[in-house]
Image 1: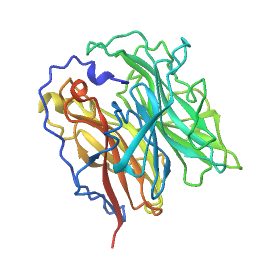
Image 2: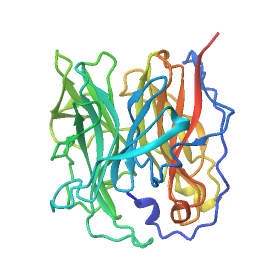
Image 3: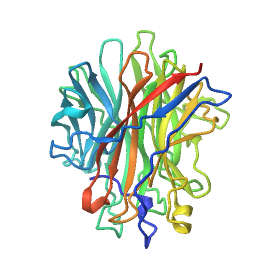
Length: 379
């Protein structure tokens, strides 16, 4: 089981919250020519009979999705695994693919390795974005769960996901570094998402900045070049500046999605949608203020956001599920790490995947759930 971070470090004495409500969202506004709708059919558990727990603990990467075979890459416990089956409702097996680098003291994934969302180049090579943890010795007073320093790395595969090769240095340098004191038991850069830009000349990576220091935990981005041959180059990182241009100078990237007041915007997953011709982001919002004042997740939950260029996310977000984005205590229900996967070529249908516990972290762990969605163009 991975990261239990600042959300648990407030020393909360928590009252319980009700099971999350499903919010049916019409994302059609005067600026949009489509609607995004969650199905009336209830969410269902994915891979519940495999014996896995604490999954999906990061974004989900789709290795294969055909009419009779599905392979999903994500993390369970402290390692990266692949879930396999005939379809989402019939996941029958799980295989470990990458384990923590326990024997190298300063490895950025010494204590946790989570590879998830992925892209493929023109040769079919897989590039999966990685959340790695080095546990820094700080202990959260919450069931002795260790604090961590997080880094963003890369796992690649040239055999369709049968084996993976890890890069042994993070692909995104951290402005603050390993010794930074965030004021909490977690720090670093975490929970990444990866996608190509519109014309596949660059790779965008989105992530949560846990360093705080004048910020909450919000969503930042960087980019990487793609060669004329369609091969991503992860050796040079471009950081987003406040004027929405990029630089290779080591800076703290601009926040592209920010939670209001003392709320955190976190766990992004971004895809480019063919039908809307825009980037769609699903992410979690966790509003601590409303928890203290009302104990109800009026604002907290899973949101959908849209961008024309993947850089400017100024259109108003749409809430698609309501609930706490993190486990406040041992019994509070929560959901996190949303992912959109598409089930048809036009990308008008698919599933919202998310990790959920109905009975709290200790009582139930957390497991992957899926719920259908549909995107419709306006008449």
